[in-house]
Length: 181
Image: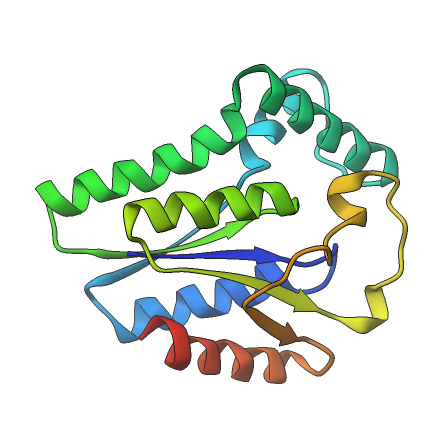
């Protein structure tokens, strides 16, 4: 098992590169499974129940950030959802099949990334924090701390996504060879 936390501002390409890497994993390794998840997925489910329609304009992004803060303060449920998924996969791996799960977890906030690093350290799970940068979309102010403080963490890996889609696919193959394989 390995955990990679991915971060990057909106439209930086983090989901695209995660999808490329997971595709490579599925083509190259029958005993590995790539899982993409986000600490905000649980929050989005609750927001949808409250009437959020799935849009991500400035006001919506601020709402999601604030809702995540409230849920974290209340019972830490966004973080518990992610660690619960990891623990479920650990149990499956130990009981059912010898699958090497590779997690790609989207996290925005430095404090969450550091908590995940410590969680992985305690469980002896290899961990790397990854930032995806695309310079033509940087500099936008979103008005919430989760989006506006993306670069306030000492990431282990920096992926520059300033080229073509083909270049991004090449970056995914390089990432796979260096960190996943």
